[in-house]
Length: 152
Image (cartoon, rainbow, N blue to C red; front, side, top):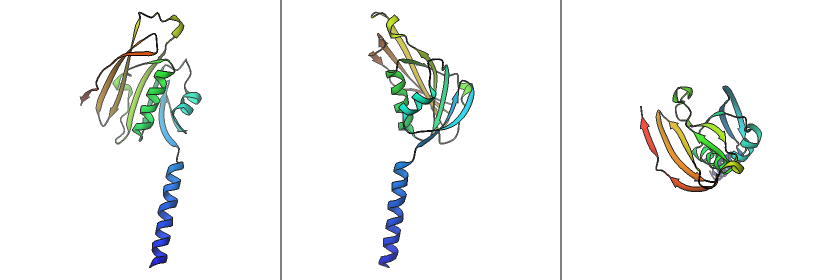
């Protein structure tokens, strides 16, 4: 009996170790082409797949936290984020769907008095939620709205 319990415990521990080392597999629609990619983290994904010429990006993932970090890194990198038209998003059940239309902010051309509006949206299980940001000079956050969600 003890041997059986020991074997079961070892199996559980080994499966936990494998889960910790799993990379995040995400489905990406990038400039109208679908890709299934493996990303170690959001910065890894941005370095490999996102360029200033990227205009449309839709990311599907099971991991909400991964996509939340991706959105934060886009803003830090100077991308303004707008809502992707809803008809372009193919909803998958149980997937978190974060959709972006990307527009690079040239920080050197932004005057201090200009306010840039950023809109961030995601859809999950046919609910669409948006959050609005306003930034001054491409970096200072002046305003952050609450989530607004519309169900179908």
